[in-house]
Length: 316
Image 1 (cartoon, helix red, strand yellow):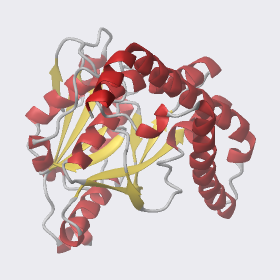
Image 2: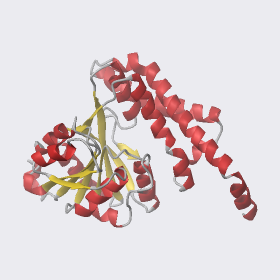
Image 3: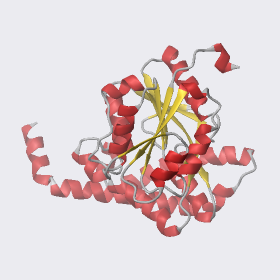
Image 4: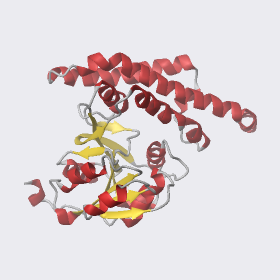
């Protein structure tokens, strides 16, 4: 009904992938089944030098596939952007399964804010878990507690590119930093906001992320996310709160994690889903490990640049 009432914009869905033969097919199938006019959408898979069967699988679906040597997800997304012809670009990861109304909900959110607040140029969608075992359920709440589909609409400062959309025009001034292999989505969001753009969270524009299924991969993911702190600090993009003491950082963790978890628990209890209660201790340990990894990156940065920092303070 909505589609008949408004003129819908063309949408480009960009999927960076590296050795994704296990899930890229399912990702594309969900996108091809979208409740959105096929002539108003294009799927662009940007292969980042895969050495498995990823490219053959992608080509079998008849969607656009562009390839290059392995330069990281930022480079892959930027190549996709150059190829895209849509007015709105949706970024999702190859290990994500789109809800059938993913595109229309991103589009309607953009069109609403285009009228209400034109500075809203980025929409972040809800990210839940495609869970196969206990560790995957833990990963669901650990990785996506800030972006879970059970949370409410709100303005956010950052959103993962596992499910994020932008107006194409924004990309004339904001690109993904190809020097970053982790934290590139955070850097993108910070850069966009410094230019005056806003990010809104729309939980019903949702995907399911194929979550990690072992304790090792579950904890390594937190370490990887924390590892980008040093590079972000070098580029002047890191959140300033992480430069303080570890005790202060622990308090920030309890507040941030606890607040969002309480909201998820509220909606979970309403739907009689109690998995979060069982996983909460493991979620807290995982987030503590993430924040500790970020703290270590900060400390390493300030130790390495102590002389320079002192000189700058003296000059001020």
